Amino acid sequence: MSFTIPIGPYHPSLEEPFKLEVKCEGEIVQDAAMHVTFNFRGMEWLAQRRNYSQVIALVERVCGICSDLHTLTFSRAVEQLAGLSVPARAQYIRVIIAELERLTSHALWAGIAAEVMGFQTLFMTCFGLRERLMDILEIISGNRVHYAMNCIGGVNREISNPEAVLDIVKLIRQQVEDRLIPLFTTDRTIRARCIGIGVLKKEEAIKWGVVGPTARASGVSGDIRRSAPYAAYGQLEFNVPVETAGDVFSRVVVRLLEMVESCRMIEQAFKQMPPGAIRGPEFVEVPPGETVARSEAPRGEAFYYVASDGSDVPVRVKIRTPTLVNMPVVRSMVLGANLADVPLINASIDPCYSCTSR
Amino acid sequence: MSVKSMDKGEEILAQLSSGKGWEKRSDGWWLETPDANVEKMAHLMTEAKARLVTITAYEVSNDEFRIIYHWDLEGRMLNISAMTREKSIPTVAMIHPASDWAEREIHDYFAVQFTGRELAPLFLNPESSPGIFLGRSQDDHKEGKGEER
Image: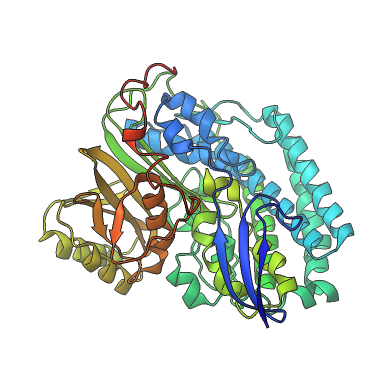
């Protein structure tokens, strides 16, 4: 007997509003339909009615997890339009904050995945680590979520206490290597819940243009930090973890290994960061034109298109977040899956519906 | 970026533009052709293993839109734009499925028709009218610009 089960838009297994209608035969999913938009805020419309400095404050609110990434990408787009060069020190600070944000995001995701699997102790461990990361971001910026670090032409503030940041990063790296990776990869329950579940084949990932850890867990090695380096990424040595099985377990492994790489990048950035200015001129004239910029967010490539008519208000701002391109493949991931695995499969792409609706 | 991939990108742009009208910039390569054959573009890009990053709709005038297809070809952005006619443009979703949600989103926000496909609402409720959110006709684009600052 077939029946349709609506999950969401408000449901205990969802962190944000989203609706998934799954059609089942018994407990096996035969089809699924997705509905997003419950967080629409008209961000693009609003951005086209504010000056460039105001848009930075606005796009920081596209996402409550990768907020820095949005200001970074928008700032880079405007810098390209205005022909501004960013001081080298600011480029390194941008990398440090972006990687701290990636660590925070991945720690959050690991905690949520543990919670969805019913592993409360691991959930608390991950969120404990995330607290330390948020503490250090608060020490740097004064805020735990919206750091307001980026401005057009550089960054707003120095990292005044690098030793404290490095101490936390060392702790995080140690905890990820010694606790999280062994727990997530050897625990029998986690393996049973994740291995062979929610498989996304490489061909499907390519066909749908999937990005970020979701793509890299399916053998697609794309990473904007490597393929189109920005900020100071071109000066850093790092690996891009890639797995090939395409299941939930691979997505777990990719993100955990990425946390180690983020720690390595932050350590390198502090070592290599030159002294000097952290931003350019206060007021920037943006000539008419159009440009695109993209950055590697924790969930994958984020994209901005910005067009200027020469005034201080952009005439077009287009934002494409990684979840928008990753969401469509959830349907193929859940086909043939057990209904009980659907929340975990959905969570495994680390979706952000707020970003998606924007 | 290898010479080989530059050649591939150049080759595609040359085929779409009769060898002119495109420029290389620091943020990628740009081609603007009002009569671009978007289906041919999608075929060429799919064959070249390019990834569709997204599609941007830019309202220009008289309710017509410039539709910009942003492709990633081995790390380089290829931005190819075409104009709508009577707010319509052929779909490329059958050729390149990654455009599915991008086209549906543009339809929802700007009421642009992508001909040759069904456009199930992505962001809207089924009973809503498309184009109510971001279309210029719905707002105070010119007048309101300075007022909020």
